[in-house]
Length: 313
Ligand code: FSX
Ligand code: SF4
Ligand code: F3S
Image (cartoon, rainbow, N blue to C red; front, side, top):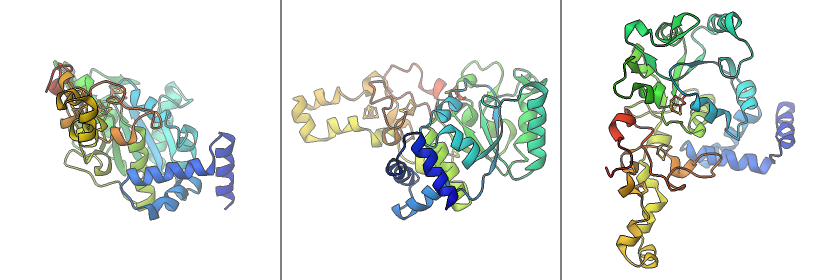
């Protein structure tokens, strides 16, 4: 009770009303594919967390856009996420420790939470030349991943790079960059996107805290709740050529079709993600709404598979 009170107090200080928070929980519950009876339980995960799983967050070959995306999640705010809901023990971008102190922190956390921590990996792993293309503190990304990932309870690969290699793995890929699962042969829960939507990461974590397991995934390791449908299946621009009223408004089916970005290269029909529903920046917009074709950024090998981007599929 006290914990909950303090939580709502903190929210109020940030200008978020209880009503706004419940709205967010309803949205998150629906995104996770759970019935509305779960809304109070989802709220409790944030307001009165019973457990704070330890998280070791690794950075490899990437642009840090994935962390930036999670850190910009409006709710849960980054401080709640890092300190109250999770116990983030190691994260190079946000931790105060540096150099030897950071290395010590990593090893201390691994020892203390052996077999119990959630490992989050951001970025892909160079595998050629014994992994020589990427090092931290004198050790290759490959060595670090082989040490940290197998000792975790579960590993979440966040972003297209950690999932499937992403931009660093684009041709000619001299460093032999691969996603985590491919590079070291472990199963990961994949949250692809370049960057991914923070809601899909938070939804996966909440699924774990609520139901004691990570969400069900497809054969590419992606949570079904987020990556079960194509962009095209959920796209509002589709309405313009599938709805008689719009066709009438545009004058002809062809004109209504012009509103769709297919002819300027939209990869929506081949891309599985929930961008049209969850959008980015707290529901402000998403690529196709902003007038840009979907690049297919959550699909494996999207860079090689979908370039040149602005040409019809
Ligand atoms: Fe990759 Fe993440 Fe793209 Fe960047 O760190 S998925 S390059 S948005 O940021 O890994
Ligand atoms: Fe499909 Fe893209 Fe057209 Fe939307 S804009 S209807 S996703 S092809
Ligand atoms: Fe990526 Fe396409 Fe969504 S480019 S962000 S999957 S609309």
